[in-house]
Length: 239
Image (cartoon, rainbow, N blue to C red; front, side, top):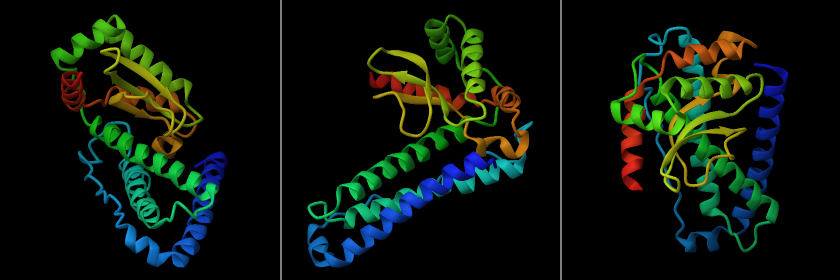
């Protein structure tokens, strides 16, 4: 893990800890009022890893397990903790910075959970997309090969930083788009992720160091298309 990544993680953790400490004090002072609101937090459960972490060619079991446990399962736990804090929060009395901080962290944790689920569900294969998805990709990008080139180039452009590359279905435009996201909060409004590439350093640095482009090449050969096809079929029918 690089110094920049450690610094980002430290700053994020410090912000959550500060907001949490303040919230706990507010909650204790207004416990009786909060009990009367009847607000209940949603409880999320982490999905099991959908493949054997030893089975992905080119990506080590060590980094896949670390990625899953620390970043995905960690996001689920964080989302549950934040949800509990929000359910107990007296919004009429809470300071603005506490509300802003917790709601921002809620969005980050929720999107991290969702995108990591699509990321892991999209790994573990080396085949081709189903006929319906392949036709949609060819329709919207010109060809499957042109989509691959664009998707991989976007991932390599984010190397050394952080973010996501997302193949998403836009119900508004009724088409597939490759979406760039710098973090967990920049996603297409109304978009439905079909396939995602995690370009945060936690996804590749342990195996590849600064060679993010090599990780992207490995990922492109490890895509499990049946999950993407299932999601595309589901989302295109919603439109």
